[in-house]
Amino acid sequence: MLAPPTLDRLNAMGLSGIARAFDELTANAEVEQLSHVEWLSLLLDREWSWRYDRNLAARLRFAKLRHQTIPEDVDYRSARTRSAPVPPPRQSGDLRAIRRRKELARLCARLQGLSR
Image (cartoon, rainbow, N blue to C red; front, side):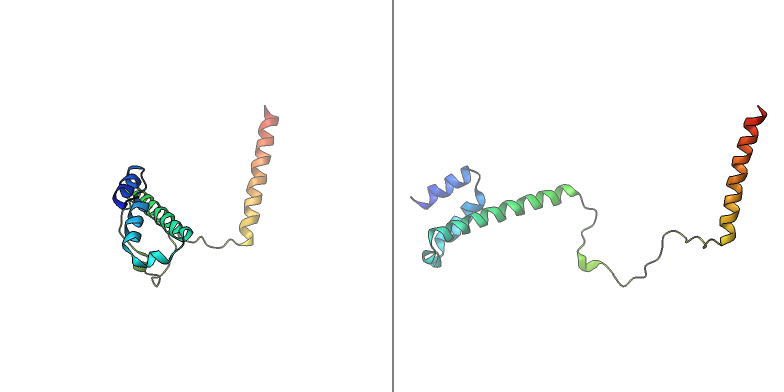
């Protein structure tokens, strides 16, 4: 089978990655040393990589990222601060006062129920 019709059929079937790999492998003289299984695995690997790259490019395009940054742009040496102020620690007297208020609220609720 001739190479140009094979390339046309691969492209028509939607196997563009295999078509490109087939074209490159037929031009390479070292390919003659490979077995059929190795040759086929190279073609399939190229198709898989081509589809993955195409899908990744589409996802990145639709992600609508606001900034074009890379991990090297992050400054890890900057000071880390809290965004909200830290409340002061409670003292033991505060907990007693809260309990007294709750007990007083329960007592008032009981007294209101009795007066009706």
